[in-house]
Length: 211
Ligand code: DC
Image (cartoon, rainbow, N blue to C red; front, side, top):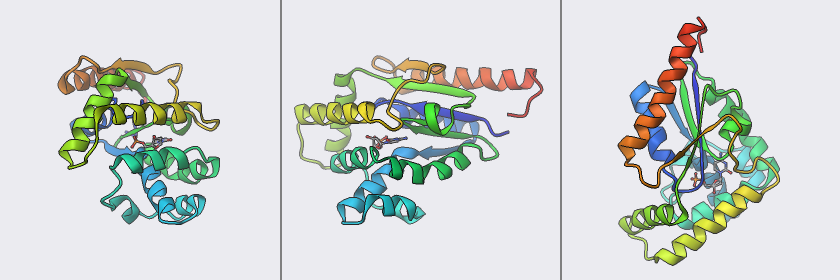
């Protein structure tokens, strides 16, 4: 079985948490594609040309300890607007999406560009304030010295850049299901997403196909 679950959405919408939970539940591999752009952004901040960095990206580049910071998120969003950077990362993501055993990929363009034929597509959202509150609490728990208004402004700036870029902008695929997590617990959000996967698996069984 090579079922692909595409999960897109803006920063701190809950897509990463949902993706990890689904991957664990179904035994699928999980790829946080934002981490690829964060690693390229961090290498660019160190002085490497971002296109060269994307073309030569190595697994160990994803293990850097500084990829989860607010600065790394902004740097990622900036390099993600460069078409050649995106192009360099496409093949790896597509191969991952079709690996045997099933895969969950989360990002901004999974259901639209990387895996438009995904069997399950979700677009995870939450209000700006809820997302900023989650991100603020995460950053503070990690020892960052920041304030809520700054986190909210950063998040909005990043969303706008991701949605307005010309190449593979963040947008909901026409056949994606929108999941608003503003008032849902993690468990509730995961159950809703899992119901879609169960339906896709049943569909594939009924059609005799080997997704
Ligand atoms: O998911 P994240 O917040 O870690 O992503 C960081 C940035 O990377 C995000 O602001 C935009 C970019 N990104 C992208 O353009 N396409 C993806 N598939 C994933 C992330």
